[in-house]
Amino acid sequence: MSFQGCDQLPDTQVRLVPSITDLAHSTTIYNAASTPRAQTVILIIALIGMPLVIAYTAYVYWVFKGKVELPEKGY
Image (cartoon, rainbow, N blue to C red; front, side, top):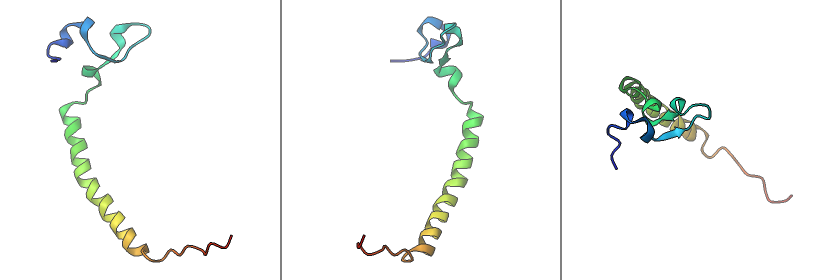
C-alpha cells in the first residue's frame, strides 16, 4: 500500500490522533513527522551520547564490581 499523494486527499489521510472537533485538526503521519534537519540533529546527539552512556556504565560496573555483599539468609 502506498501513501504517495495522500496529503492531497484529506479524506484518505491516516489519522494517528483524530480530532473530536474538526478532522482537519487531526494529527496525521505528515504533520507529525520531524524535518530532515531535526532528524540529523537527533542522530548527531545519539552518536555522541550513546558512547558516553556505555563508557559511564562500564566505568561504574568496573568500580563497583565485587563490592556488594548480600546478607546471609537468616531472616
